Image 1 (cartoon, helix red, strand yellow):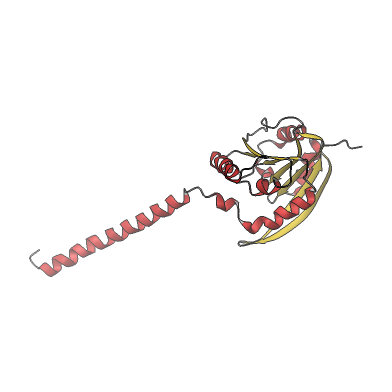
Image 2 (cartoon, helix red, strand yellow):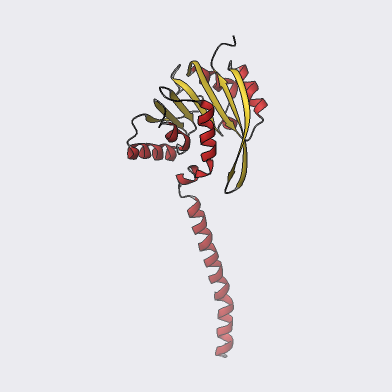
Length: 213
């Protein structure tokens, strides 16, 4: 083109949209990259403190007891309860969360806290090893409750307690499976607490490894 002004305008029409696309793509890449960053703080929001306190009240005194927190996440409940229990074991499937809890335990100098790799069949749980078992928003993810719950029951001592917090399934379904597995004394209570995302409503189901008589 012999007209320099017209040539400049044509070049702008070609370059500007490309630059805009590049910036848009770059921002999208940064957003996707930030989503890949592991941040255990999302598991430790203080919003759940009312639930943590309510569970402790329902479990009762932990002095002299061994507690297992199944699917412990970053240990939000487990580390707190280790202040009162004889020993707390946190099980988890996610390797990053396991590393995080191990590092935190070391940093805190915890002597009564241990982390073990969880599994889909609870085979990591030793028979009669615990007085209390806790599952917070984990039950609905169990691969096969009919198989796993009897194993969990066997990991409790003769009068051990299981506490399940569930927000996805009807508590009636959970209680039916617990009773089929041989748990007794099942009871349920509704609990709600405010979070930065709104009101959260859960069912707290408690059951025991004891004779029906």
